[in-house]
Structure formats: structure tokens, C-alpha cells
Image 1 (cartoon, one colour):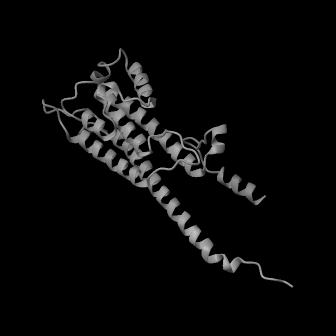
Image 2: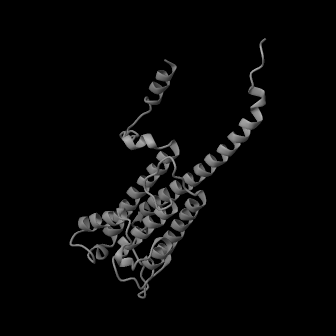
Image 3: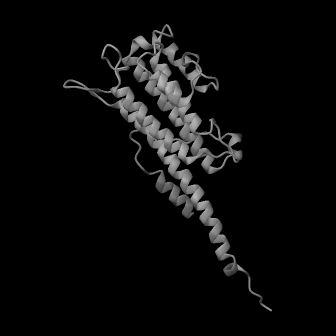
Length: 231
């Protein structure tokens, strides 16, 4: 009854801007730990953020999607397939993760820079997760790799905002700060990706640390928890 009351209290929060939603149950979850689910959900959220960023960048830089597709929607569909593929993206000449980021942010890159940038960001994140997008009991992630990926996202964002092409123009139009307009939605969405990576790195580190502490606590407490003879 107390548990039901607690749940009722949680559900009474106002939801004028929408209610939090959980994923539908799938049989694969039976082979996942809580840490696996958190990691996989963060990965899925980062994928959604990258696709949203791609849409925003294509809207501000329509010349980019015209290099690879007839419409923006088609370019986005092609990009999503590229994000889900385990194969290197051909326009990046076989480069992966940070090497792909360097190429995508090179002033000399002539292809669809929006797609190249998003694919490279996604590949960097997947690589930091051990090259996996789904996680099960025996899977683990290195918290330092996640932390490094967050820093790489910060660097990539800074380079994108500051580097210019040979004509002195930004590589891609993203954030806009001016007397008549102010749009930082790109920065905010990128901040969500960085925040998720940092939070997951901290959670993973704490999880491993607490597992070790729990083991030591068990050794120390074992003599105290031994049953005493009663006859």
C-alpha cells in the first residue's frame, strides 16, 4: 500500500509540457542489467539529438543537402542509414571517429559537410562505447573513453564555430547571435550530448567503485554476520 501511495504521489506532478515516457518492454531486456539499459538509452538519445542537429544544420545550410540528395528529407533519410551502418561512410575516405571529425572539419572537404560532421560525431560516440549500440550483461564501457568522447564533442563544436573556409566564411552556419536574431538551439542540443556522455562516465565510474567497496564491505562484515551457536 505504501508503494502504491508513493507511485500515486509521483504521478501527481503537473505535465503541461508532456509526460515522461518509458520504453516499451522487449524480451532483450531480460539479458540486460540496469547499467546496460541506462547506457543503451543514452546512446539512443544521442542518436536522436544528432539527427535533430542534422535537420537544423541542413535548414541553415541548404547547399549541403543538395550535394547528396534531391530533397532535405531524402538527405536526412540517407544520413540515418549511414549512422546505423557499421561500415565507414564512403565520402570520409574510410576515416573513423576522431580522424573522420578532422576530415569533416577540414576547410578543403568538398562533400556534404553536414552529413560528414554528424556521421563523424556519431562514430566517435559509438567507438567510445566499445563499438556497440546495444548492451547486455557481459558488456561494459570504459568511463575514460566516454569522458574523452565528451571532450571531443566540445572540441568539435568549438572548431565548427570558429574555423572558416578560404573565403573567410564559417564552415557551416549554426548558432546565430545578432541584433535582430538570437538562436542557440544548436549549442543547447550539442550540450545535451556532452552532458549525457559525462553523466554516463560518472555513473560507470561510480558503479565500478561501489562494486569494489561492496566486495570489501562483505569481507569485513562476514565475521560479524556469522550465526552464533544456540546450544
